[in-house]
Image (tube, rainbow, N blue to C red):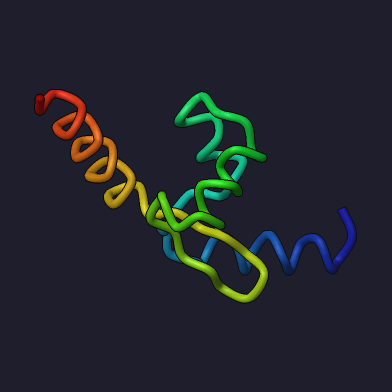
Length: 78
């Protein structure tokens, strides 16, 4: 291990642990068992809650779970 790696490792130990609450498009595709292309299509059509930060597309897990519950409820109404 060189000096740079040792310093970086020491700095990483001092960082607080942060629990992620967002997912990437790839993670969302796995979570929903869909292709990434279809997830992007849902975003373009504004059919799925998402956040755009620059060129990145992110999803809040809490919002996706609510969206899924709402879809489920709608499908049961006749």
